[in-house]
Length: 332
Ligand code: NAD
Ligand code: LMR
Image (cartoon, rainbow, N blue to C red; front, side, top):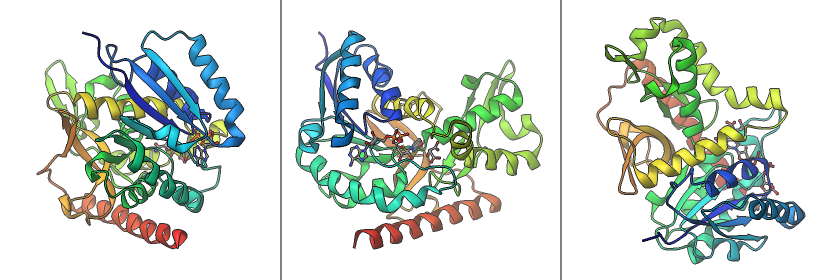
């Protein structure tokens, strides 16, 4: 029997990530080729005409899985009955800005959209915050939507995770699909810690550790980390716009793995509400390695953390605590 359509909200849908993301969702890349979808597209009134253009293109593309499009500037109509909310709306970072520079503009948006989601989304709606500062926007959304279970509110660090896979694959000249279990710890910012200590590569003679294969700790502890941390800025410098196709694709990866599960023996990175695992302070949305099953994520436990990693985890946690305080000061 055909599945009931899933209702998927994309905020900021007239923007550049929205434009890359909505056709991916309508093609089944996010929820699978057997899952019909109804897209709920939200943007603000100055973007209403562009938003309508996106709706026209979605109709014109005649996607078999797409069962309807709600394109609106009304946040209540947009949130009504949605099963998944991908929160992309906000102001993007421009060249020379740090992600926390966009804080004031974006946290107040997330506070007001939290209430609309809480009141009007479907029960058990899963939320992914993409807009920066992604971790702190997600935290504000969580705090101002207390009836949404905290496990349902996440932020995107899968793009950083995928960037780390890409860097290892280029360095070793192996297929990216053969590399797994990198970890992005912490903030989706330049303080994040891309960690390869537990990452492996599939080789003809079995799985081997990335550290062993790269055999260059100076690169892994230096240039590799800074390249992943600074990749967003490098894209902005090159395109004069922030990343869009890779952000959209990673958002699909995040939701797909959350809903449909991670492959056996593989974890991914997700920004989730910290429960104190790995001595990360609770009360932050922090990127951890997670596995997913039956629509629920679980933090991978028991990984060894060496002294180098400990310092990096603490530094990104510290930055998130500062961002949290700053976000609250912007709201008061
Ligand atoms: P964009 O400017 O092209 O699009 C943003 C859209 O949001 C615009 O259409 C704008 O009108 C809309 N918008 C603004 N306020 C809104 C509101 N209150 N409600 C609904 N929509 C609203 O930006 P973009 O390049 O698509 O990036 C979107 C966000 O994603 C930015 O914050 C960017 O920094 C962030 N980003 C995050 C990641 C990540 O990995 N987490 C990656 C790339 C970009
Ligand atoms: C990214 O990582 O590409 C985005 O967060 C955009 C940015 O501000 O770097």
